[in-house]
Image (tube, rainbow, N blue to C red; front, side):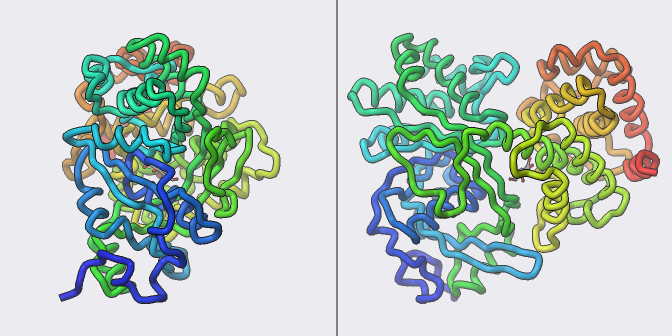
Length: 485
Ligand code: CS2
């Protein structure tokens, strides 16, 4: 029987991290210790510890379940990262996570960790839906279940805004300088957005607290990038072959990674730059580029690809008509962007095509198709708005929106039954029976997903309506073939 990875001493010399993790203290609490964090921020921090050390190890906090804790705690936070390039796989044993706490039943231990004077940074990858952000009004959404709960039960919060604000409130009362809040989710100006939501939330609790947060707390924005599919049994098997031990926390990811960060860390930070991160004041432009080109195209190809019967992104890219549709979307998304010094959008688009096509990465279209209501605004609606004002071709955006609506419809005329995974699933279903231009734009604005100025563009919604009506009765593949001639 193969033993499970538990301690550093279980590993052979070649597999061990090139530093002794326990010789470094803790400086970061990370909320949302999922695969992406393990492949990205924990990987960068591991590289820093390897190169220059420092008390920057991470306490991970899992918000919903005890899964991450059960996977990582028995392994003392150690796990294998499998890095899959087109020509093969390399691996790295990551030692930057020290422990994992879970707030599924009690946020007390996580908040206690966050108020420790050692903690300089609280970072987050909790996915778009967990924040309870009101993107349209740039504040906290008090109808969001967890936000509403935390406003009533601030003594024992369970959502992101409640937990961050509570920990800050305790630090304020104990005169401990606040930690820096580092949002690493795919949201435009993520630092600014989270800052306004936390301040808005705090205002409803205590006005002095909200003023203190406004004056004292840094919320740098970031752009994070690394394609990281959910681990499968294959991931665990492969990790076992590499380290000769069972690893219940192994993760696989691509070779490429990018981290662009605004340099605003009053209590200090790890030298993430020596691990390849870029520090700049222009994060917003990079984030926009990534959201519109990578994520926007991802969402479009996920809806279209899933309904063409393609399980993985790489299968979509192997299908000539679909890969032409991907190129079309990348090109139009790029045209909505202002230039960034040193970045050529054609090269960026080509690198995305190559990353999406990576045969070693099994990234499910269904995984990307999840939570569309939280993703479509920043990925499709905002670039659409710019495309309209720049007089660009808006057809690719109409196609993406129609494909998303077709996914919401859960019509099974060209596919097997599937579940609609979306925090707004109840409000999204059913689609209006009459799928006219007017009823579609009414429907989207009624459920709060439509930017106002888009609502009355009859020509645009006419295109969406035509494409959607076709998608509701014909196989998706035939529609793409008609679209890309
Ligand atoms: C994807 C992202 O699931 C999704 O919505 O678009 O997770 C994407 O893989 C990452 O942002 C890549 O950095």
